[in-house]
Length: 38
Image (cartoon, rainbow, N blue to C red; front, side):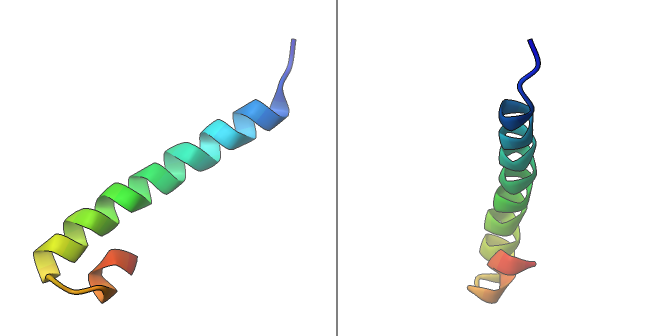
């Protein structure tokens, strides 16, 4: 049974999770809010 919605959600969750983790690390490294968006 195909579930494109679930796949699309999981893909978005993975990508956003990577950017979120990177943002937290960069934000903590630069110690600034702008680092969160890098």
